Length: 351
Image (cartoon, rainbow, N blue to C red; front, side, top):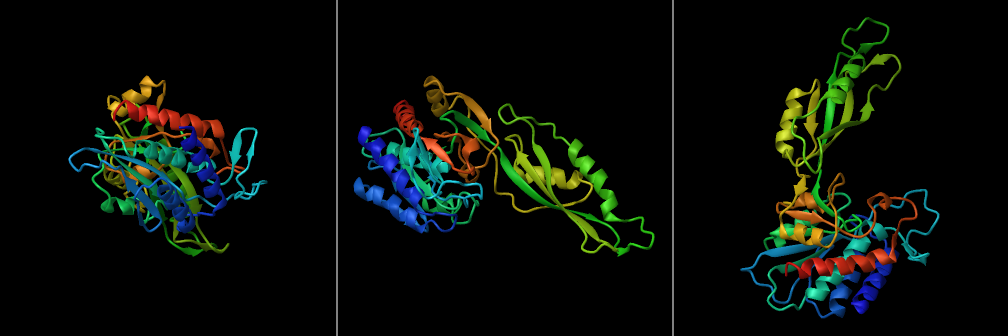
């Protein structure tokens, strides 16, 4: 255990030192492959996704996916540290991607390695270090799923303070258009689309859906962008809005898109429908095992690779969500140490 934990922390330091922005994860994928080589574990690589399965893999048994990502966002301008310098100060390991989601990734890799050679486990294990999570890209876990064995349940590693996110909101983004009649500003115009904007915004402010989730609450609808007009003396033909919708587990993206499109007082076009909400039953043995270890359950408002999965999934990992994408990102070393222990105890109860 101590050796695995030390190796996991060293792996995270190496990953921090290697830039791995989404779609540019080639070198971190290589470093992750080195981990498997060091432990004599056969692995496969598809694009910048790296994956392996346990030694006693049996197609007749259910499969548990262990997944986290090794891509990062760009460092924001408020950094005062070098985002690619993995330094430890006051028990904090600093560096871009340390919290989101390097800590979870290396902890899950240590977990997989610990149980890799377990004899006659109840579940098969598949470990995936995925790419392009931050942009929900085509070559992320979503694109890899067709190459993997059938997944029956999943643990997705993201910063949750090792509490159990038993549900996760999905995402719909709409491009909305308020149409009107263009013309010269000097002439009368009773169909100026900009003048329609207040009523449309009021509609979004007041619109609600009746199905409320026990873990995720109501669907949340937010207008996040508004654009109209190019010249001071021209009434534009339209006003364009972007609408962010966080979807609870009571609706599919398809049915919610239809409901909103039919009800809205303007034209609504969803950009995509594939970022669905996720959940796992409270009586699932993984959840029961986590609760037995003193972990709390909650619903997560943030999106992850869970959105790609069609099976029950549990989001749990070291770190704090609010540190993600922040300046001088860090994770406590003890959080990684604790995470590996908790992960191992969690699987001990079900394997």
